[in-house]
Image 1 (cartoon, rainbow, N blue to C red):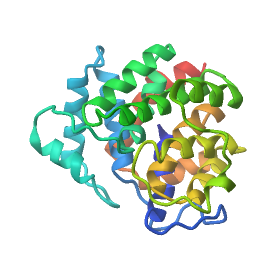
Image 2 (cartoon, one colour):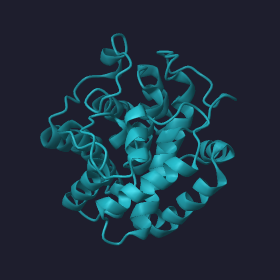
Image 3 (tube, rainbow, N blue to C red):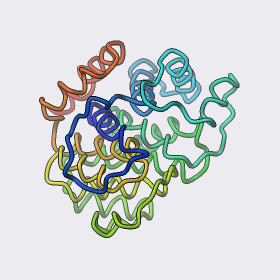
Image 4 (cartoon, one colour):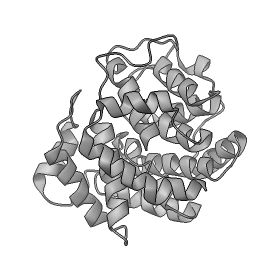
Length: 267
């Protein structure tokens, strides 16, 4: 949630300017939120207000947010905007990483792994009906559910590998030299999870994510959502900088979600 948004904001300026190092100023004046944060909040809003977790309602929330919130950096994907403007809930068979970057709330509202998988699937299939698109969303949400449920990193790694077939036994040093921009779920989600698994704390997870390169705002959004769930919170000094840059209407929705789900499930 705020972890995913922090990853998006910090990674936002490196998407087309990869730096391949963990040594960088965490918040640059150019940093801002992108479509990753906006649609993350849209899914959280849907899950707060639709008790049946209907995929059709998820589609309505995504369209509403895309139409009402402009991206300060970047923009919505072309395929996604075609879907938004089409006004029909016809999936576009995408396996892009957009399904995974917006799903973090599903890991908090669910009470079991099975429920997490179903909610993540519903959040993804309306735009990303390709098996890899849905798998990326499910893997991300499941990692968050396991992390906030107190599982160890080894347990998270083993569960995700067994359930989704991702290779998580690489290191960031293995990935970094050859990794390039990849907007697919299968080319982003495993790397994002590895950055979390290798990290020592929340900030380190985001720094490792940025250092890999690629689609940094989305990769770090995924990493940040898992890291927050595992480490227990977004550090206050990071959260302050995030809220300085985030639209006040998005903050209101996020804070409501935290009061209803996140804080309750941490107590």
